[in-house]
Length: 516
Image 1 (cartoon, rainbow, N blue to C red):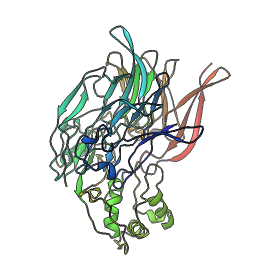
Image 2: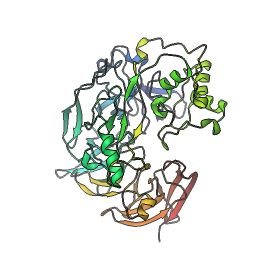
Image 3: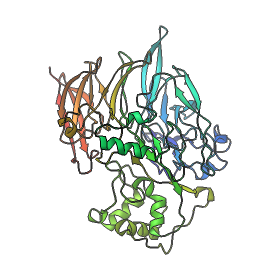
Image 4: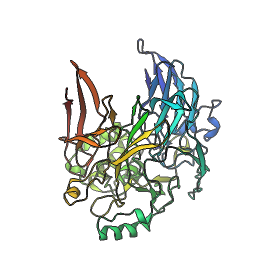
């Protein structure tokens, strides 16, 4: 049994080592250090003592196993802290990587790093796909990884050789004191990105003249230079596609008969910035240190992905909030290093907005390098005043990419806003979470769309919509197909809750039978 894990993305945080256990005895078989120890390969690409205080570089999105070869393919997350790397100078090898490990021993066979010295939280978001492609008349077993940036990387499974050329492009240096951004980053030359890469004035929304004027004014206040522009202190920087991709955690589907990859994507910009870290020990300062990177300085969050804490006193009891902060819940990691007084001060600030002091604050980290001088100010979607993306559609897509050639078979918008559709603004695409499944019968099934709550069946060859239905809640999950007594079924988990604030949320499984 080979496992990764969810760890904190700020400091202090655990390192995300990959571990294997004997399923029969429970004994440890092997451990792979994703933050290398002294003397191990990759150690020189980190600060000298990074292995003692940096965390992350964990496998959170899942793995893929080549059972015949005994190779496990492990995508790894970004290093902690996510947005400031002055205490981990170097490329930080094995973070933001695809690792090919011997499943029996943990020995590294090959690795490829998608983002060097990640300071944007641009780690691979989903398990890789295994597929057989044809190249120059011969079959090659390949492993495919999609990314939040909208890239598709295709490698020979056995040796990690890219099947399409990869170029290393130079990017600007960071102007943040102590930060040393990587000089170059890898970009595949094929397939072309499945999400837009650089936000221009011509891409801004034209939904209404007022929204367009507002978006123009806002864009002028942002730093905007495309992929891999380092964050700055104080002024927001455009991330496009946003922090949730491009590709996201729903994963991709691959048709083994054709080697066509089906991947859904978000296609809207977000912004992010840095601010000086505060070292005070009152509730507000502790909140800014530990909570604001997700829930924002003003406690409004980024609903529905990250809930607002404004008015939390009407929804959660003090003891419940304390337990969630300490132990974590859902996608939120816990903060076990916080002492009781620090926890109480944070909860008091969350409930009242009052910066109550922590009389006996948690001790500082043993290694001063774990105290970073800058903090991330929060995830911010670039939405217009009416809550719609401030860019022109498509806001979400479904793509079919031929991995034999690197060419697109088709790309279509995925999802729509019902209230806009009623006004004639259809097929805009929307944010979508949850992946596709492709069947031998020629169908691509996908739910995923947040706002219309649809479950769709598309023709795998053309992308034509063949069938759709409305689920009771959005199907933010990847469907599964199965057979009973010779009849094929498709099932999806419908939980919802990721549309506009107040959108319906539940928890049901909905199954459909295909015609005989």
